[in-house]
Image 1 (tube, helix red, strand yellow):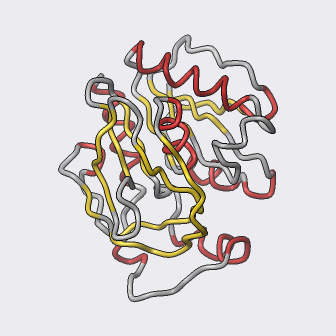
Image 2: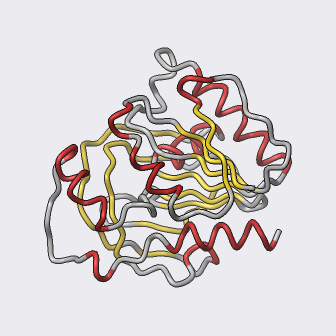
Length: 212
């Protein structure tokens, strides 16, 4: 069973996790924002640390972030497969001593250079980005597996544990575009969702979890 960690502090934006759920096999969602504490890992085969409009540097306002960071370190120790997405990418690296900075909103399709990694099997270089924060220093044990012209640390992987992170949202398909354009704006460019296949990341992660 997959465990999805919900981190969105604004209820109006929780459709990201709802969209993710439609692309996942057997799973449960744990709401860190309202529940805090820590979820049980009993029966959990893999964990997804989802996105948020909050920043990892807002821990005084959202103390559950420290609890979740502790859980991330435990997941690494127990070698439970984990995928961090957007805020999850930032939280994982921050939890391991990396650094995150706010650098202004990116809300467009971007072209990423993705490593030859099983997480990216069948994933094209065109991916959707909606974020204002950037990982500017990787956490301990993390290495780059994806970068863009504007963001060197666009995706990362732990050298020893089954842990991956992506700045882009694999659950963001063209079906979400009208809602995201309304909430965050959207910058059209020469790239097209017809060339994007980011949702394959979730399929690949589920397969990696099953493969153990």
